[in-house]
Image 1 (tube, each protein chain N blue to C red):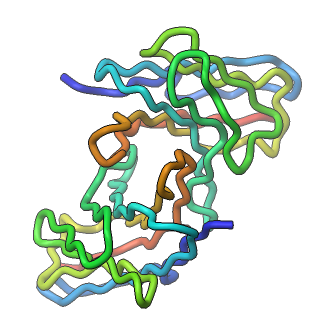
Image 2 (image 1 turned 90 degrees about the vertical axis):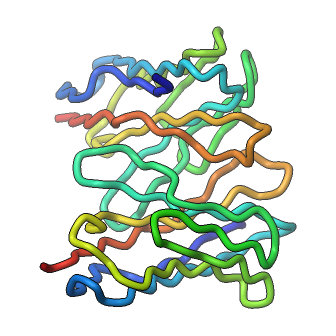
Length: 112
Length: 113
């Protein structure tokens, strides 16, 4: 079945450091891919998405590129801030389907 | 304001006592879904609904029921809760036309003793 694998956390970085959170997936067909962010005590909110191969999603300085050849959707940010501390989830929805598969989440701590 | 609401936000109950967690959205979304979040497991889909009277199982449906009688509401029913259903529950909704990004409620923390 479909699956999403994320790098384990927690990830601890200093402010202004470069961030990469790895995400790889297994799916039949051509899924849509998402990154969601969960701040403490809140529900998830969409960070960015990509719906086809080579698409790049971007938002708030975060970027991720849909790589079909490596089945990956890694999240990057050039310079993190303390306010980026949160849990990040990679997710997919398969083409024509409505089941959603989430990764286990990666907790990010950013130190001032 | 576009939002997904859940009630209650916190609930402590005992094994076997039926309970319902309500979910409502005001965005006229066709798709609604329930997830549970457990440490180290991420979010797992319990049930989803593609429209009124259309529901289907997610990955962990055992012990749960849902109904979709109105487009805006999608309650989650635990007819006989057990301690392994202690978890954080999220409801979400999306349009089926705009790339399926989901809007999440604030969560319901359920403890079953």
